[in-house]
Length: 331
Image (cartoon, rainbow, N blue to C red):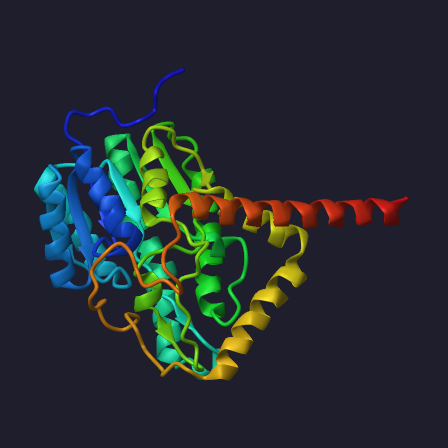
């Protein structure tokens, strides 16, 4: 079988949302593997830190401050990358924002910007880089979609709409570009991350949640993204938990969503948190780091596996029970 992976002496990747979280973890990993990097985000301070770290890892990194919700800035980012390195081999759509709370209590300008950054931002990236790939007859577009592309996030309905929209957009493009064997469009569906994303997100209605203990390591998600360069495929679940969450919601959509809704509604009744616009309208503030603040101390890798296995077994049990009951009704 012909190897469709990029096999170049010098490889170039563009990563959006690269100043923290999964984007920064991905940038580190690409740098460690000798990539030329163009890192993009809105905030210059975080980008300068990310570039310094990537260069220390052995990569050759530059940055360009970019608001992906602005199509002209994304077009400029593509042109900047081509001017710097002559080609783009991998483009990682990763920049994203989130606003949580009761729908009517989240300011409309916040909701609109979530759509502009997430859905329009990914569309802008695809729109301007895919013609470059066609001219090169080679390239990989990787989209960090989130498990939200398969299941709703209660009290983050607009965020859910963007992730579902990204999935639909990229699925259509996968079919459209299937006639180009050396061009790949890959979607990644990770679950909640131990990243700074939650710390930077906008929160309303009293929500003040932290990262749960079953959240995945952003570095593992970065590995899943990097592996797609060598084994491209349309859809990837970077860990067992994200895949089982998809199955659980598919088997019990109402039960699963109602359970999540109930937990968040209870949290809002406590009313501990102050309204926070987060990084939706402005660049992310400190920390410009991979890991964020956990609800409880981060479990060891061994305990994370135990928690993850327990969730998988619990989901498997309920799926089996559901199928058994369905079978009885049919009989």
